[in-house]
Image (cartoon, rainbow, N blue to C red; front, side, top):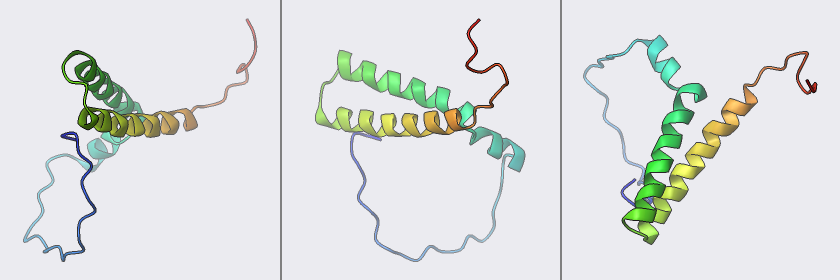
Amino acid sequence: MNGTVPRTPEKAPIPKAAFKVQVMSDKEIAERKTPEQRLPRQANHYAQIVGHFLAVKNSTQIAGAMDAHFQRLNKYHSLLVKSAVSYSDDGAES
């Protein structure tokens, strides 16, 4: 993040790679992209940047980074909540 929002890059041709090396299996990559994996890590990042903002440097750059991390956190939270499974006892008081 580095406290800045990068500008939209100009459309430039992307050269084709001579070869591609994949170091993780497709299954592992897919698992790492799930909200169940991403949300806790994003929450940790957000907590760290808030701690830095409060304890070290209160600045607009850090505030911008906090905002970007919070938007990601909100996205993963929404995805996780949407994946909730309904059970027949949901909503029943015990």
